[in-house]
Length: 169
Image 1 (cartoon, rainbow, N blue to C red):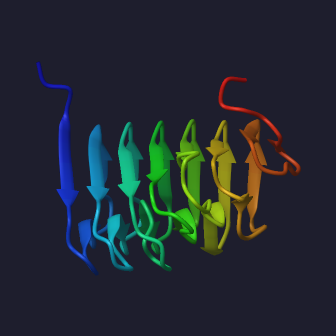
Image 2: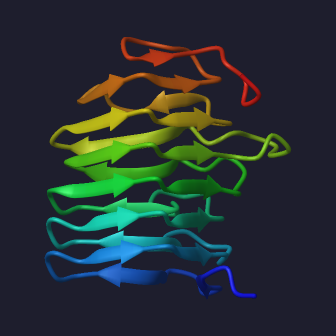
């Protein structure tokens, strides 16, 4: 019985999947990069209006850019996705420019020596997060240029994001 498709890269300074055109839809894939040096991304994108649905993105890198997902285009729509960061002291779990996330979760395992600095980073533009959860990072966000609605985290809360929760709650 097959449960889907997985794409994995083990290289350093590489990205497992790169979206360079506009209007790309990605659905029900598990994408991981387990390289040990910076900039090993599971997925990165530069085009606009991508849609990601029902995917799992996994990163294991610590440096800037070594995240589960990094997109710099506009109009990204992400629904029902999981972002996992397995690296100790990673900068972020996922990074976006102008994104809309709904029903997504970002996690880092509790056995890391040092947690990621933030679950989400919205470097430029604005992002909206609806029904999003973030667990295992020191902070939920690294920039305030975003709108949060009915979100939760184990980190400190803010408007639209209830903090101090545990995964079991």
